[in-house]
Structures are given as C-alpha cells and as structure tokens.
Image (cartoon, rainbow, N blue to C red; front, side, top):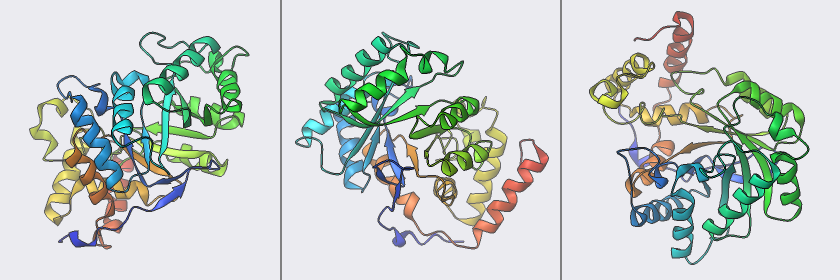
Length: 318
C-alpha cells in the first residue's frame, strides 16, 4: 500500500471536555524542550524553533511542566521571541513536581509552583493546570489545605482557567473524575497500538464531561522511526516485541508506523487530543504531517484485528 502524502490536511480541533479549550488534535508536549531525557538534550535556540514550528504547523496547544527542567523557561523564551503569547494559543503546565517542591501538594507549595511557572512562561495565566504524578494517593491533593483547594482559589483569581490531573494511575484518575472537581485528565503510555488498558478510563472521563489528553502514543519513540529492535535504548522495554511486530507490519504495507499509531488513537472520538513532544523543528512539523496524512482506509480493519489478537494472546510478538 502507498500512502497519499499529498493529502495532508489542516489539523482539526476538538473541545477538551467541557472546558473553554478547543484544541488541535495534536498538541506540543514540552518534555524534550527541557532536556529532560539524558542524551537527548536541546539548547535554547532549538527549543524556540520547535515552538515556532509547532505553531506554524497549526498546533494551538502547548503543554509543559516544572518537572521538565528547562522546559517552562524555554517556552517563555519562545513566546517572547514571537512577540508575546499568540491569540488562540492554549497553555498548560503542572504542579507537584518542581525539583524544589517535589511531591509537595500543599497549598503553599502549589501557589509557589504555579506563580513560578507563570513567571517563567511570561504570562498572567494558563488555560489548564494539572496536578502532576500524585500516584500513591490523592489525599494530600484533596486535603482542605491541599493543592486542589489552592488551585480553585487561583482559578477564582484568574491565574488559571481549568484544573486537571496528569498521572499514570487509572485509579487516581477515576477518583478525580468522580470528585467532579477536575476538568481534564492526562493519561499516558496506556492507550496505543501496543496497550489499550486506558480504554475504559477514557470512556468514563468522556461520559463525565472531563477532557481527555493522551500522551506517549508513540511510547517515547518506540512506535516511530526505524525498526525499534535496531535501537539500543529500546531493547529492554517490555513492549519491544509488539512494537517490532507493528513496525514490520507497517513496513510491509508501505505505511509509516508513526502515522498509524497517532491516527489510531485519534479515531476514538472520546480522545480530545494527543500530546507529542518534538525535539527538533523538523519533528514538530513531521508530527502534524503524519497525523493528517491520508492513509489507505482498508488498513483500519486489519489494525483492529491485530489489536484484538494482542489482547487475546496477552503476549509480545507478531
């Protein structure tokens, strides 16, 4: 099968739950911008160009975090280089994982973290503020003097407009959804061609009117680029067998695996956007291109069959 690469279309937008945010289906994640991953560092100039290219490619949503080292500062540099925050650009950042207040979900630490983020970003407010990596328990987040109450106060002050939760734990996400106090969730690494364990979580969030952001749909690059078995850093990942099988399947059919992986997630109308973190301007452009490139319609039934077989086998391989 041959991909019609000339059929690249403008990114569509979806409402993020019941928030005010009408985000592009692909958003720009800020992990790589902060040189968060050893061996994959970028400099300030590169980070600025990544943001510039992401926006030029049509993306209208940027996500960052104080946990991603230099990311917030570099996003701030990019916004200043653009002459200020462009109209229509949505921003989100996180609290709870700043290196100086790590896993501190108290009201005081939350206010300090958010105000520090606003200063680095060079903005008066963000659209979405996510509580980050509260995996063990949400008790300190829900406490009367905890992060959630403080975020609600800061929302009333106009420093943020919506509140979210970004964790791996599905149980924590369900607690947040059922509380009725969160506007969005960010789930990662559990909804992709390789694993769909977050499917019922996505259903629950959508049914409750809570926005759904899905990250790591490419599993940190495992489902992008050349054969993952040829790349040393992936060889110990438990998903390597399944990823290799998907790579060979896509290669045989002449379709880019990254495009299939991204578009499969976006075929679920209950997913509001996918978050992909480019490390270069070229990657930012490529992410949009592969998300919008026309793929042969006949592949999708086969993709669903492969996914169903994976679930039945419960093991890695072709």
